[in-house]
Length: 161
Image (cartoon, rainbow, N blue to C red; front, side, top):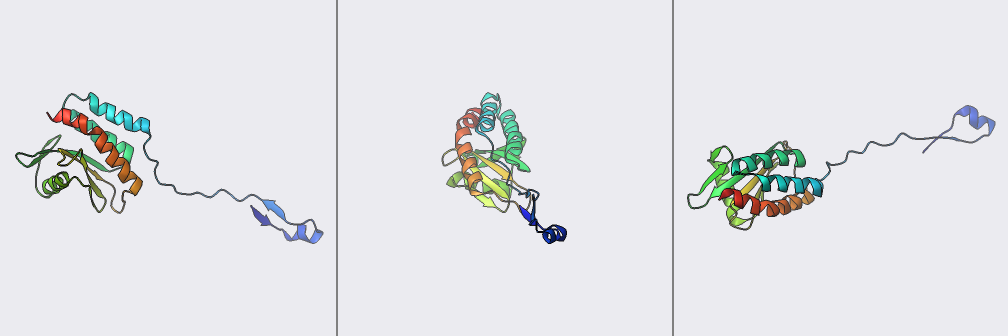
């Protein structure tokens, strides 16, 4: 509260008048997805009939839940050392990064982009998530994404067979 003392009131000896201060607007980070939302994401993936359908649904769900601008689910064909997404083969620098991350089993953060292996090393799939330029993933988000990736690995393995 703010003490507001108009001169006329003080002159009469009535004391300060208390007027309420407007509430502060505090910017809070976006809320983490609820367990219900994460379970729905996993259920949608488990119900998919093909890798392409499951990957496309997973990508849409991740963009919505994690407030990322781009999400890609990438699959590695280890015998051929090729990387695929729902629309076809991936080549170049992205393919090299994905195979490195999947091979070592450790996530990689490059600026506002996160590459998260899905499943144990050597992972058969990787999530690539990108935030707007200048944004980063905080520690609690990284932990949640790693847990989610481990949880959806069996459903993705089923779709990759």
